[in-house]
Length: 238
Image 1: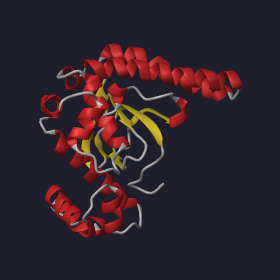
Image 2 (image 1 turned 180 degrees about the vertical axis):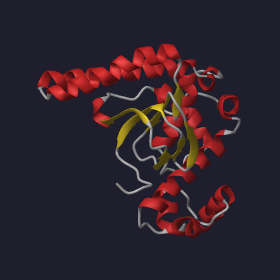
Image 3 (image 1 turned 135 degrees about the horizontal axis):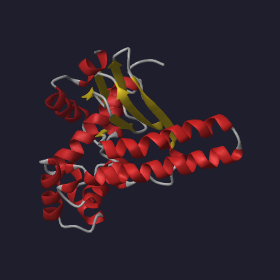
């Protein structure tokens, strides 16, 4: 597997013993004991961890879960408490044992186990300070909607109308949760997707700009440089 890379499945990585750095979508996160990382399809991923690392890795295709709970959409990692460890360790061990059986019942048990695991992670996500700052469903519905419409040139009002909110209310919710207005959040998500496309495809800068809803490729290039301190071509070459 080439590093960095991205894949089209979900992955859970629980380091029970480790140190190092995990890079997800060009953001660095410290690896430390009992930190569980949650990575989504299309995210650019790279890591460097100590040789004595131990833990669990679970990967599953998108169709294994009907729809990912909104509370998990923006969570990069969980720092597990002792009560979480006591709950999750048997779940991971059971999934390992079921995978060894290699029969129809084992497959059904694994699918049920993954969904059961995600339910508990959703509960943990709801307890995180990030999600306590505002109603999680509203802000995360907005985040998911932006991700789903990344190629469209929608306005903040378009998003507010879709969520049955006023523009002022959407602004308030975004600032409470992210400390940014909706326009900046939308732009940052487009820049993140642009980084992915620059790194992993042979699309031209003009094609990427138009594919992300920018009507002017030169404007896209200016915004990209403002956000990253590199032009799109410089980013691609590095």
